[in-house]
Image (cartoon, rainbow, N blue to C red; front, side, top):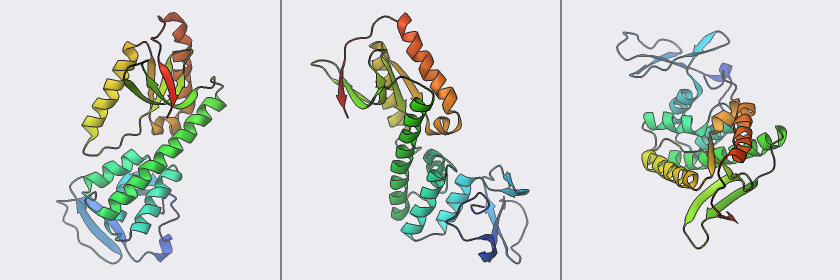
Length: 238
């Protein structure tokens, strides 16, 4: 499946000695020849690739990783998924979680590298979006703080003259997702009470619809003229 999706890390199709076929758990089918039947309680919606119904990339990654004991091979596979634009880190982590693979140390190490890789790529796309769609230059990667008061949080981009901020939502669906989302929400609510507009952008939206995301940011910048002035905050490098 990964080879059909365009991955170069897996072996080419002629080198495969078997093909795994996902079927519903209750289907009465048997492995035969090169076709190995894998029963699953959660059958993914197939994607048509060259006329064949193929497991989507996140599920195919999880099934491949389940058979890979080598940490380097797992890391190369997950890295290609993100660098090649095949899927977002969050989708990969969700599939690995569903497959109960995050209890393997070498998989956890690869996921940590994957998340760092995914964030770096998302930041590059954010820089490109600002440049290609003619948005004014923000200050990048800053912390906000009230004068003599508490730390307000870090931001990926901030326009001080407009009190508009962009924050990349690179959360991964892991066990602490609810706590992390609560932290995101608290920070956003606090900043907006101070008159600062916060635009959350996901890596997927940056990849698939950068022009639409640029329009959202531009609209927020233009609307700043109609809002009450924001509270004064200190902008510090992060």
